[in-house]
Amino acid sequence: MSAARGQETTVPVAVRSPSTVDPAHILTLHEVAERLKVSERWVYEKSRRRCLNPLPCIRIGRYLRFDWASVSSWLRQQERGA
Image (cartoon, rainbow, N blue to C red; front, side, top):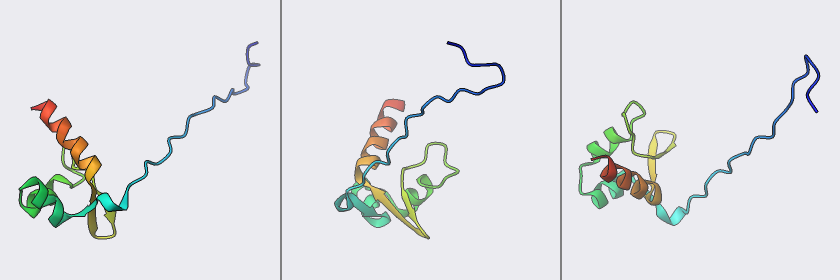
């Protein structure tokens, strides 16, 4: 059957559930810098929104927090892009 002229058909859209973040894997800017062996300034610059491929972070007001699983995935993508 076809929709009558002038009527809109609705198509169900799958809603993506937000991924759960394990609080035990949340890191501060300092902790991420230590793990990556880079400066805190480098981490901050790579997490800026204007960056071409920003480091994934969680913004809580003025604070940045990082999910280690997301950072690890980002690192793997960087390795492939090199």
